[in-house]
Amino acid sequence: MKFKIISKGDKRSNKIKSTIKQYLTDFELEYNREEPDLVISVGGDGTFLEAFHRYIHRLDKTAFIGVHTGHLGFYADYTPDELEKLIIEIAKTPFQIVEYPLLEVIIRGNSNEKEDHLLALNESMIKTAEGSVVFDVKIKGEHFETFRGDGICISTPSGSTAYNKALGGAIIHPSIEAIQLTEMASINNRVFRTIGSPLILPKHHTCLLEPKKDKSFLISIDHFTRTYHDVKSIQCRVAKERVRFARFRQFPFWNRVRDSFVADDKE
Ligand code: NAD
Image (cartoon, rainbow, N blue to C red; front, side, top):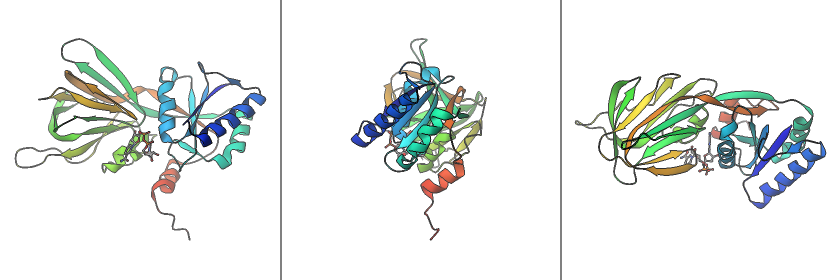
């Protein structure tokens, strides 16, 4: 099996990276940057997102796993204490794969036929540098509402515990093939009205955002943000691609949610 390790770059993560690399090559596994079967991220969830985007071109072949060197991460869920066991498992046992849905975002320009196709593991956020965004929201081709506010966050089920949660969105089990739209400070008064609740769309229900005034947006995909000018539409739906997590032990999603967000009142 071929593997690659991506470190956050700090001293502790680099040291753990060297240890894993050394042991796995001693077990005669091949360190391969170009075509890894397994990518191990060492750091935090940000490092995991970076690893995911670095190998986004081979999602059908590469599986991911995360070791955290700070606080418990959602993707980086192995602790440095579990390292020895993890190394032996990677070297000796074929790993199980768990596949979860991703978000596809297609950004179309006004003046040319150019389309930008992007994939997010957590979410995409659409905002402007200044003022509020105004766009028509269409669901399955039908006008749903005209949104005015700070922006909209569209997240995957895996990303539902990230920025989406901070916006009051629901936590969705990642086995459910869906995307979630959450509002960022919508303007609601006698003139403007939005639904005001997060919307969960199933697979094949496409959401289209069509700008009404400004056509420039700050569009973020997971941890990186770009400015897009002259935007005609932003289309979001459940992607046909999926992310593959390597599983060496059980860590049920709801336990992860509990351990990350609920106070430990066992004592
Ligand atoms: P980062 O690494 O500083 O991450 C910010 C926090 O989000 C960290 O605590 C991380 O563990 C957590 N996080 C990331 N993905 C998560 C997930 N799927 N479930 C639960 N927690 C998750 O920031 P970054 O490197 O720029 O990473 C970008 C991601 O961080 C974004 O995709 C966004 O969802 C998240 N984020 C969340 C908030 C918030 O909750 N208010 C703010 C900023 C960024």
